[in-house]
Length: 396
Image 1 (cartoon, rainbow, N blue to C red):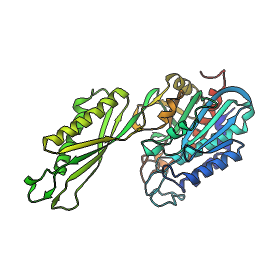
Image 2 (cartoon, helix red, strand yellow):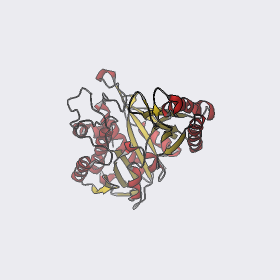
Image 3 (cartoon, rainbow, N blue to C red):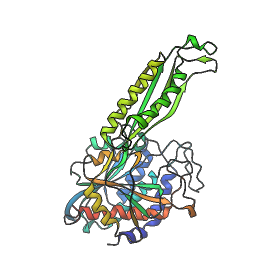
Image 4 (cartoon, rainbow, N blue to C red):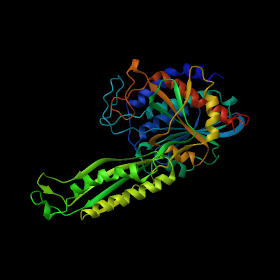
């Protein structure tokens, strides 16, 4: 079967779905309208639907006409708290919320794959589970974990799982693939610096937490440059500093919010230990104290199964016009990592960079735009993976 040709036949529908969803973005755990839209579309294809999975998640189940494996395909549904500035006629209608990371395209492409596969269920081996997940952008508990706890990877047990993400850093019609660690564990931390407030004209009578914070920010950069093996990819960034109410008042406390990004559990554990040690050490030097907290349930490292990735590359290379490139690991985080802890599979990327169409802004930008010509390619790739990996005689 020519999956790309099948996707071309329904391309207007895929684009329409994407544009409809783009105008109605919803934040993490609030994806009620999106979930309703997805469920109704799946039901119109004759796919069995389960709603409210792990909160607002939706699961579609399609049983093929032939015996085979169980393949799960995942798309995330949530938007971001960003005011859209992109010059498109289908801009977000929700103030302060935007699909700035392409999750609307992920849903549209997976709905396209569901449409293709449902039309060929008699030829399909095994069972396909379509996982429409909430709250990927949450960064802590997220949406994958609640869905897993609700049993989406069981009954029947999933043999392979695949996820696709649109990528503004990659040329249109190019897939990015990588075996092993592909995305980082994103650990959020908060440091509360406890000092002693007073008048800005008499700093010697205080323990200035803002002064301590300035030294602490600089010292924390030494964790990556001097305390962690430099061959281990690692980033620490302080993204928010809070403290004080007025220019002549030295406050009692200040807070730093930051993120740590690592690609292996050994470096992850060591980095968290060093951050806490440095923060408390700097605070003590100036007579302050520091309370350090790390967000619980942070996403693990996203690790692609080497064998599944190798076989996936062979499948994707059969799609006419598509390019398949090996990519470097990136330090963004993804809770698709949790699905990969339950079944072998791959998280891969599809480029949308196209300067001729103004698609040059990065994911999470208020001006983020997608080259909609690639949506049919994404839908075709997902359908093809389900078809090929579901076949007992296919990739293994």
